[in-house]
Length: 257
Image (cartoon, rainbow, N blue to C red):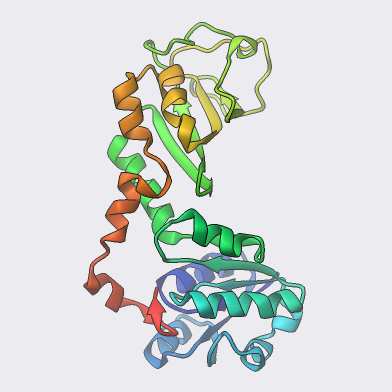
């Protein structure tokens, strides 16, 4: 497949390397000379210019690309690039860096194929590492929805239940199930829930604490503190305090990468 990546900073360059390692063809667009040189030194074709200009995207091959990733730190550049790519029938992925507010997500979500928030993804990984144990956040699907993997404990109220007896909150759905040390799969009703079994659940942030109490056996107070709610979660608050030094290390097209 052919991809055009706008922005050769940290996010763009790492994405390009992963795609190339999987034998995809990648062309990058970058207007900052040192950043452009760094990408070229790693063997990438890099177009010099502003990724929000149609002629630059055409030079990068948008007309024959399968997808465009607008991954700069400039929201306006990213959005404009995606709108141009839409015109050429490309799949569009847009990076946002602003605080993870539902209003920002809703403003752009319907106009691009995918929105990514790298800092939020990094926060999920950091949170998993810090918490350890029986709960692992997998992904944020929307500002109010998260996919989590939970491990049944002895303290879980549902320990000993079957899948058919499991009653999750209305805004939570069981996606996958795996017995201890077994691969995840589609759950069947007669499977029993035992210590060490894993469940993957899609849940609204409002019911995450209830899900944790039910499947892991956390107290109400601990579950509420650990679950967090959307943009007010501890992980997001930590990342909103990104230092100025970090911001200056990798930048392109007038934004942070």
